[in-house]
Image 1 (cartoon, rainbow over the protein chains, first blue to last red):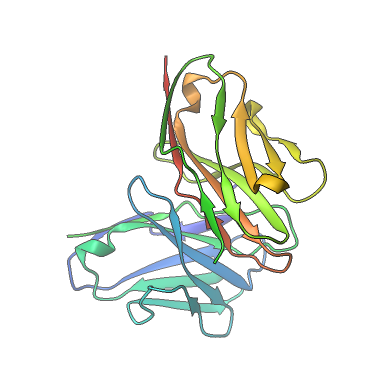
Image 2 (tube, rainbow over the protein chains, first blue to last red):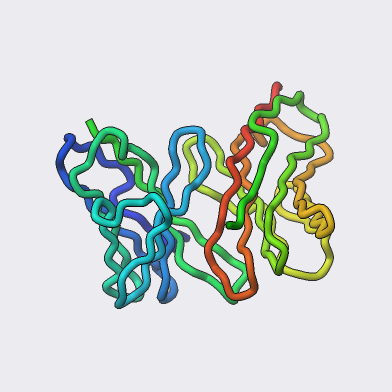
Length: 115
Length: 114
């Protein structure tokens, strides 16, 4: 069964609105969660690393004020796309840190379409 | 910064042909290497991984990859492809023994002609 879930799986919103994406680790505690985005026919680009109870670490070029990340518990990390614009339309994927194991589970992804 | 290169952007093969997809990484230390597959409309699935030991790694669905440290390469191979192998293939690396960020290559789209 699924080890990592994301909600919603698909969302369509108007330009200027904010969208929250939830990522849950179902079978284990995730101290750290990685957030990726994938453009159509492109690779996955690491956006940020969220750490439970502390501020997220953003990759170069990713606007922290636009992509708000919260990691309030060991099983839930959220990514909020604020004031979304059409260029934010993408596929957002989360994966918990599994350092020390040989398994990396990816969430099923959330497809965001901004009109 | 660490990076992963996949030089084949789109590969088109006939069924039963042999496959080799190139992957090179840039990092001089310890690496963990992965190949992921993404079938149309589906999320990423792990094909195989290399952490240590035998540099020839066998994965699911008949895929294998060879880690050649001197060439910084981790090419994916399959002796005879099937139409169902049509997908996007991503090479990925975790650089460093204590790191955990996965860095992905740009991906290779594999199209198999029936």
